[in-house]
Image 1 (cartoon, rainbow, N blue to C red):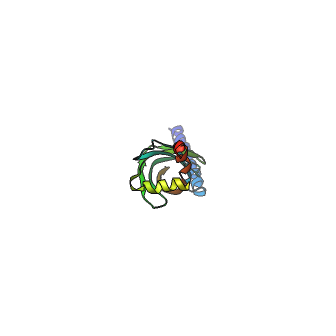
Image 2 (cartoon, rainbow, N blue to C red; image 1 turned 90 degrees about the vertical axis):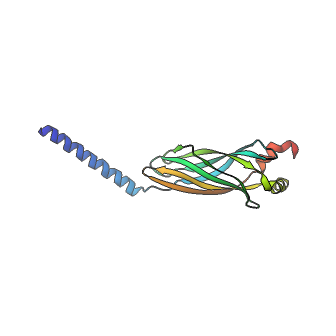
Image 3 (tube, one colour; image 1 turned 120 degrees about the vertical axis):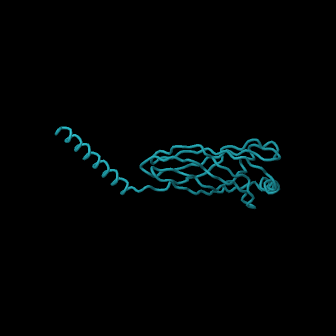
Length: 168
């Protein structure tokens, strides 16, 4: 019986020590909000008179000493020149971002020209089609969830030019 009590006491001491070390680590290294390091267009496909598809990459950096899970990304893509919304959406694919590491999150957006055709054509002629991409990435770190906002202006002209090169 005494040996069993000694074993339980040892296990209790080990648990307390591990909890204290863990608390000290998180006290000296509090959970930091992940960072959006950048947004870049990967590809523009399916350009028609109705719209196109844009695949872009959202680069997320995790400054923490523990990994995190990106659970969703809400986004809005607007034409910079007039603020018209080209696309909105939600990506619910989950990604693990390693501790002190980054990961590229692919996002697919379907864009419908609507009333923005003339502004886009003007941008192609001016050799600059600026689009504003903004949104929120929902991230789970250990026991807490945070929302990370992002916003970036991207020039889509080169991608449109590469696709429409024979016509320009």
